[in-house]
Amino acid sequence: MKRKYSNAVIFLSGTGSNAEKLLSSPRCGTAWHCCAIVTDRSGHTRARKLAEQNGIPFVEADIFRFYAEHGLSKISIATKEGFRVRQLWTDDLRRKIRPFQPDFGLLAGFVPLTNIVADFPCLNIHPGDLTVMQDGKPLLTGLHEVPVRKAILAGFDHLRSSVLIATPFTPGAPEMDHGCIPGISAKVPVDLLGHTRGELRENEVLLKQIAEYNLNQLKRFGDWTLFPRVADDFSEGKFQISPEGVLLYEDSPVLTVDYSSSVPKPVPLP
Image (cartoon, rainbow, N blue to C red; front, top):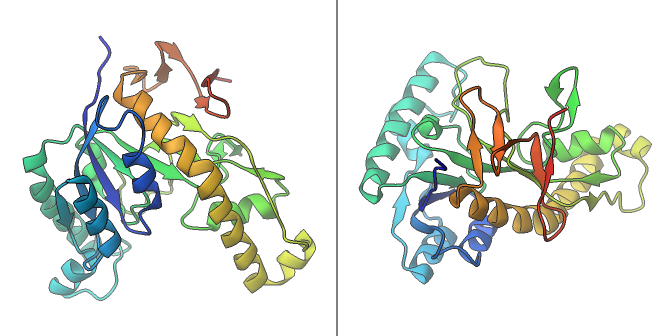
């Protein structure tokens, strides 16, 4: 029997643009609804405004304040104590959202790693095509503009966003951005703004600027289209995970689903 989902928490750290697109999805409010908007920082006026505009409960779980209250100045899980405090923060987050009874989560630019993703499925938007492999591992992993930078330096002429089902983490684990990948976006052309890759390899500042420009383009033409469509299809039970951990789309095993066109195209396993 297909498992459907109806009660989503939207988690965000940044501008809220992905959250806004999710909330304006045609099936938000019918196939699924947002039971709470959560941010990891205090004074996030955009997150609060989105909640107020849509009549959604707003939850603040300031991770910076939480770490400071536990005597730590760095928001990190690299140390044993940092990891312990992250788990405490996650427990506090659990308590705050429990009254809303979420059955899935949407990580709309949520920065801190949290094992809340073990409590219910959480879809995460990522600025890179996670189906691209190198030496048996996803090539375009990393935070912020790093996946875009990797794609540029590797000679890619296009970028794609991915939606993955986030997996729990453990300290020191090498895996990052691993998990089933329900969807990839249309191709978004790389624009070097008149520069050559040789120039970018020699100029770190310029490389960062070009990567950030392309990251913004990918958000506009990748994330904003892809994330709502995958969230809608996921909520309606089109995606399942087999007991063996294989992603299923409409009951068939897939590597991912290509959302380049109006009709999603399943990509078979290699």
